[in-house]
Length: 331
Length: 165
Image (tube, rainbow over the protein chains, first blue to last red):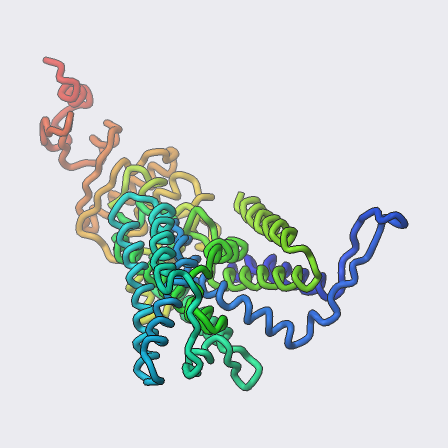
């Protein structure tokens, strides 16, 4: 019940954004004739196809944000997810493209190699964060640069086309279940359920809250800090890898330069969803709704024809507002 | 173990009383990814009842409790299965007079029930009244271990300060 009450403002924000983009908004602006105007909204905003587009577009960010929520919960952060996303895509496609004719083994090897690289990077992040006193911000900043460099090393930074015969791989990003629901959305929802289960229903989840709430106390309570922290970063990186596969599939090619700034969008989704940067506070549902809010905002501003430079400004203000409300409520 | 600095090393201040009390016993109430709300409640309610933690509900935020009640939470947390030995580091630090009395009663009861208690304190009267045996430390060295009835507070102070008698 408590968590549900905390979600009400978020759900209200979703509803408000949906109403604004559909029915419009009054605004004050002197255009030579009058001062008060009505922006009419977007008539097609509530059409099924448009709404499905929104959820499809948020799925990558949401998957990244689920992992990010875990790291922020324990008082850390993972800046490397965007670069990991690009690296996993390039590794997988270079194996797919190098595998020659459509041998079914190539796909499995490609996926395993890509996700394996992601897990290895996560392991590295986690071990560094748990075993040294380096701050996670710096560790993952370094990993971000390393992973980005590794991705750009493939094919000299040029995009690599996914071989056309890899239909299964292309379905990952472009397929639709029953012709309606995009496959990425299904993957995203599945990961959401798993992550929510992990966070809210297992001992591991309670350990995360304890660690984020008070690390010293967690040590004295007998929580295996190193194991928990390493696992968190591995999960976060693995999810970035999954997002990378979807991203690559959607683009029909691996772009070593893609995913720049994705980590910031993921952080924004988590924070808008009520995850506290000091650690120990946050829920998976909150993050999901946070990603939805950012997605609606992106799509709506785009369709409303707002100049892209202003879109950044609006998004920045929304994040600022969300954090302000969160801080105020905590007092 | 109950730490000297309950805010820094003991409590999860941002969390509820229930979270704080149930945390050490996760294995008791979460099995295979399935939390048993009833088991958790039993652990939490028992600790609240036995230690007289004054809180409106288990969902109250620990930061809103008084110092004495916070301290009861840090001690009560370990009581689900009676430990054989409990280390209390400055158990009455920042605790008001009434709650201090209660804390002493709790400690006495635990001792009667067979728990060995190692209390670390810089409050002389508290040490002398509560203990069976007292070890006097200065600069990381034990100066004397003696039954508590043996020395008066003045004598203990003299040993501590190294004054000659």
